[in-house]
Image (cartoon, rainbow, N blue to C red; front, top):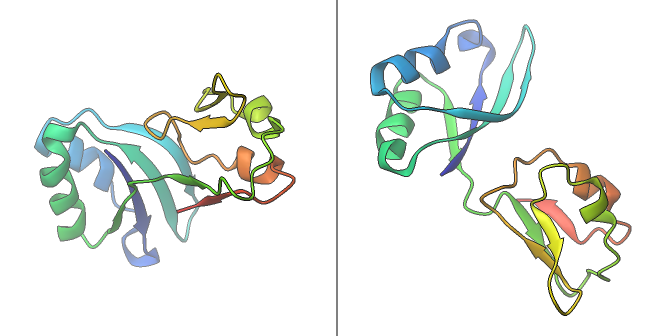
Length: 127
């Protein structure tokens, strides 16, 4: 399961991710992070069997948690299947299907946003 964590300024300097890993034993994979002295936003992969426990612990620490069921949304009506998004997706979450339409593997997507920027038709957006 992918989760989006937002750390408010008043809790940003605490080691919340480390504490949750130590308390739950969950192996968290940080997909994307933007953290500075004031705030932080992190996209994390959480093992499904630990997801409820991890989410509960983050929320108990005041971290805003959003579950990312669909990290990126592809508007098939707007997509022209040009492949611009595929060319910039370094983790290969996007590919061509046999019919040359675009396929999105949501489990691989780390929400880097490169595909959204590359799309000439605005057919991709964060959920």
